[in-house]
Image 1 (cartoon, rainbow, N blue to C red):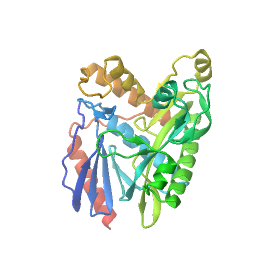
Image 2 (cartoon, rainbow, N blue to C red):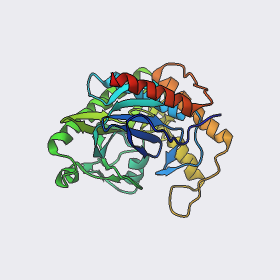
Image 3 (cartoon, rainbow, N blue to C red):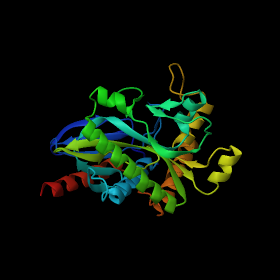
Image 4 (cartoon, one colour):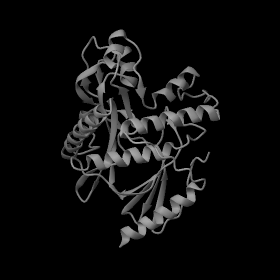
Length: 316
């Protein structure tokens, strides 16, 4: 089964290319970005050795749908989706902060809470909370965007004191983050899901703040199934979730957490296929539509053709 692990295109007007953990971002004339969602998968800030079939298509198509479904409340960078794995949009100057918003105490926040932490990114947490409990109000826990290695937690106060983002821009980002999370939660609820936590990235262009990158995909978000949530919570059982957490759990069970000296466990074709199925399940659940596999064996050729045509149209 074809997977897209990396790309090496040379598009008309291309100035540079950035190879992220899972995305390839091509800069066209310092004006347009071509973002390709590869089939690479990362966990604990490490890129795993094998790609996951259809993962790029799943992520790109979910993000495109959510960018369209939130464009009325928050301006975003998207101009077109010329290929199942590609989004083309406006190049913005990205802020060096990721806005993470959490509706429930779970994941890394729960791990810190369990260890006795009662303040996360400057936000005070009440005593006596349990795993997967809903916060009275969603909390924003920003991180600084690192080019290499781990993103670091940071408080609103530190961001402003260090001048990483101006107060004016940060307030817009906060307002947008809450509005997007509320809309994402509504859409999830209609599909029998709970949007647990997610992250947003913002940038600036011509003095205006835009939502950039992708939103509400299983790589940036965690979803619980709403059905049975309360019962599982009361019994202290693990929640049934749709997110990348199952990959992290598999790695933890195989003694890998991205620490020096640890070795990534073997990823068999069967395991990669099972992860692919989970991503497709999430796509169908969150969009309410059947996932149509684009089974083109020549992914690179198809992408190049579609992107070149799109760029021609945008020039007109």
